[in-house]
Amino acid sequence: MSLVHDHEQTMPKGALASALVLVGTAIALTALVKVGVLSREAIPAAARTEAHVAPAVVRQLTFTDRGDGAVVVRDVSTGETVRVLVDGVPGNGFVRGVMRGMARERHIRGVGMAPPFTLTLWKNGTLSLDDKATGRSIELGSFGPDNRAAFAALLPGGAA
Image 1 (cartoon, rainbow, N blue to C red):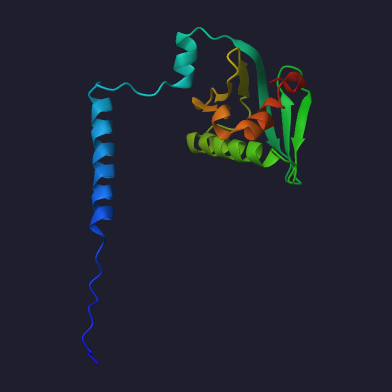
Image 2 (tube, rainbow, N blue to C red):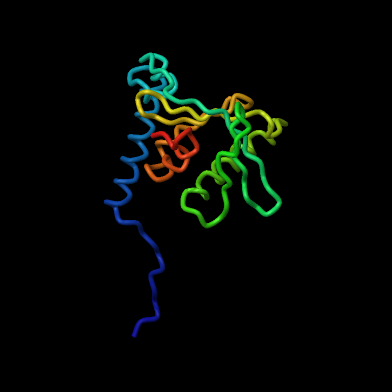
């Protein structure tokens, strides 16, 4: 019986080589984009502008916290309560989470919740939420169809 142990931990050479190739590829692609050899992925708002895509439906909305934890969504132009977002209803958690992030951005910039948010369904089917007060824009289709539908339900007639 030998009391000599080998505690050296080695990484398999194949795994190390794969990791180095991955890091090298990421750095090379980033450099190629920076110097203009490869183009950046399109920015949706810029792509819509370039393609002259017009809005199909636009709604100005405010989101107000209620004492019981619910969030009241109102249409600015009509004053109508569009929806009351309460916990436990499918889709409400996503909308509330997005709006928490938007509110945090406004708080950081010293902007209150009074200015409305713009929810836009575009003629090409994309859906965006814009905050003119901070310049932030969110493409809602990138979160999947169920989460997109949670916001689309806030449009007149639940369009799209």
